[in-house]
Length: 142
Image 1 (cartoon, helix red, strand yellow):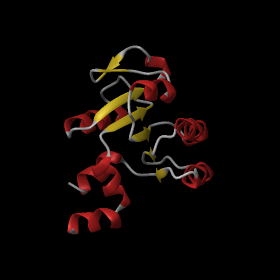
Image 2: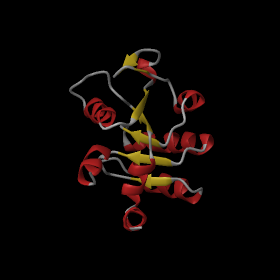
Image 3: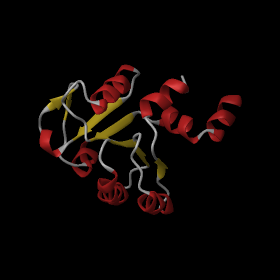
Image 4: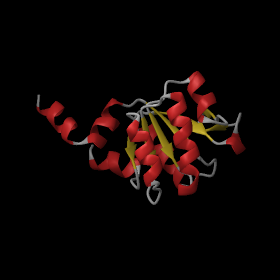
């Protein structure tokens, strides 16, 4: 009972505990980039990652096939969280895609925020996390 109460009081903990597959939008093939480091961490702690990067589509990053869009990725994988490593001005189009596919959660990494897109997503029941690193949040809650 206490675990359920803790998760209910902490939406981030709930998202992390209930998610298995994380699409990483903007995943770089370069190991020194934050997106690569975070995705590698997520894999190491047991999440399945689904890379989304149109410039790398069809290639493999961290052993996973890269998709050109969330739409094509979602056609092949059940996605629990969309983790965004894109500029804030790119978020509206990503949110529109998340809404059209019906994905449950969009997570914007540190420094990434878009209030009107967050409101739009939340209005249709999508969980939104902004300006937080999924790796750091997972480490805090381990």
